[in-house]
Length: 430
Image (tube, rainbow, N blue to C red; front, side, top):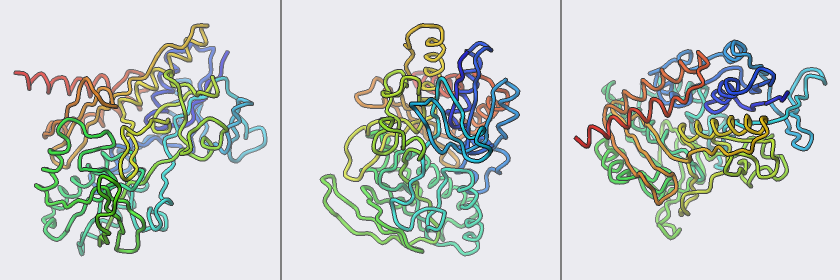
């Protein structure tokens, strides 16, 4: 009998628990450990930040969902991973409750938000907001309501080293749409500041016509932009960014005024994971082989934002490669099948599909892109926009939350997102 411990209960961890329980026989134990006792659907956070969603619509209490499926749940922070001793050290409780032994460990923690890399950044004592968590999104909403009484400039974008650019674009257009609905857009100059070398790069070297289409959307929505932006510090009401050219030379020093700001941070690995000898790269991301398994510890697997993926290309200001929901889902499925095979005495053979597929809301329409594979050259390199994406993302939110509530182990990205994209491409051909 084996004990499989899943560390993290987000978009990777919860589906991993459901699928693991569905694949393995009841003689094996599955336990989820999470610092939070609730699941949050992170892609909806931009809607929370402008009041289009409420907290209770995108979070679920984890324990009853997992226990109903025969999965154990521990709501505690992991302070240490003893990879040699095959155990986790947990915060709080008696000495007996502070250690959790495992036969297999699946790390799906997501990232550590590295606000401290830019002085003055971040929602905790800094001057910028984030939509990376539901708490951060709610903090923006509180300030946004006051901002609406006396509007001014807004800055939105992504810091040096960021790898998840889609939500920054989404949020810029969502705020634009919300302000237009309120008849206040004319009072709010908007600037998009990003570490990408050009608009629509997305950490992927661009996808299809993303550069020209996104630049056109920015112009149509009267959003100014600064690319190759190396943001160096933030003060109350002012963001300092150095704009570089394609060779890394300084083009201009910008002091961008703002009354409200949202800047996505760079990511790192969470402390307990990053501290394990030879498990991670210097940023704290887990080094894995083609089977999602640690290159150092054969009984540790990892999926999601916390795994190490090299940048698609070198850029003047550092950027990382995103890990989209579809990619995470395939990583999780591969891990579950590989652990099941190993327990049955078979070699691991399942591999995740490192493709980038994304639905990005833009307030009243949206953009979808498909990069197969993520790293060029690609078999499919496709970027389209339209109101159907906005509607598809709303529908997908409902599908995913339903999956979490029911404990369904089916791959929802494959079933719903790819089906939606397939229908659109079929219409394009006719």
